[in-house]
Image 1: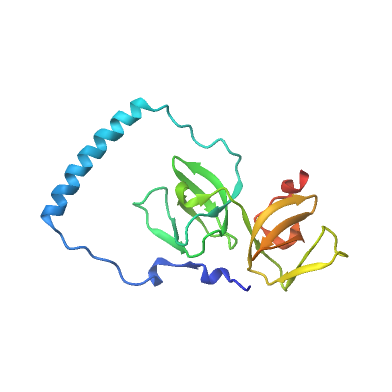
Image 2: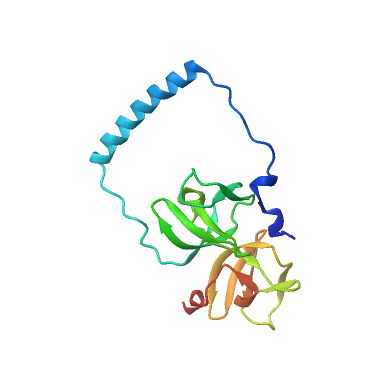
Length: 192
C-alpha cells in the first residue's frame, strides 16, 4: 500500500531525451489545410454556441489528477516550461486560482504551478499523512474496530467528512480516519 510522492512526480530535466520530428512538406501542407478548416469551424461554433463562463466553484478547492501523466507548467499555457510531471492518476491537488482554462495548483509538498483544467477531475482523493502508520476505523471513533492500516503517502478516495473525521476508501476497503491524518480536506468539510 506504500506510495511515495517522490515516485509520483519527476522533473522534466530527468524525464529523458527530447523527441524530434522529421519535417515532411506533404504533412505540413495537410496540417495547414486541416488548420484552416478547424479555424473556420471554431469561428462558426463561437457564434452558434452560448458563451461559457469561467468556473464559479469556490477557491481554494481540492481536485485530483485525471490522467496517469499530468504536466505542471511554470505559466498558464503550453508555451511555458514544464516544472513537474505527475505520474499518478487521482493524486490530490489544491486549486488556488484560475486563468481561462488553466488552474494554478499546489501539491502536498507545496510545489505550485499551472495545470490545464481538462487534466483535473472533480473526484476528490486524499493522501495519508503523519510520521507513522495510520489506522482506518469502521466508525468515527478511536475505540472502534480497525478496518485497515496505511502508511503515510498512501492515496485514498475521499467519501465524506463528519466533524473531525473523514470516510475514505483504499483498495475497496472503506474506513474512517481523523481529519488530521489526511491531506486533501479542509476543516469546513466536516461541517456537514
